[in-house]
Image (cartoon, rainbow, N blue to C red; front, side):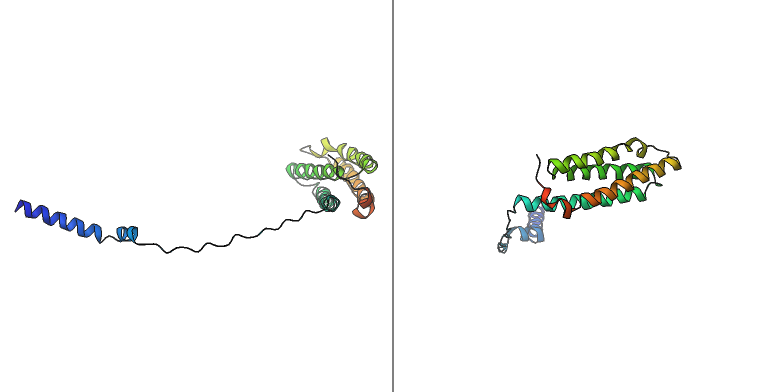
Length: 162
């Protein structure tokens, strides 16, 4: 009886293992998947002049929007003013990389003028007179840079600096 009981238990275990969906899945053949063709990526090597033009236009546009944002946000929080100021300076310095020596030096003067209000912009609490003075400086430099350094005025003065 004891022997029969063992055989029955072993038989039940074997049947349950073979009947298991996981085991059946493990030993059945899988369909071969078709290999998908790799995408073809075509790269174009643009002339350096064309890339410099595009990069300058992009930086000029970014600078213009960040300076406008800073002028508009002078009444806002310290963090927002600081972020706008840092972004506009970064874009101005990037713009400067694409200019020849003459225009580089001309833009240097405007950068120095904007840097003169650096400490005031980064103050936590500004008085109304400080806000007014900073806004006047920023509007003046924005107007002059926009006039003298728009792409149509500097397209012949663009070169890549290292």
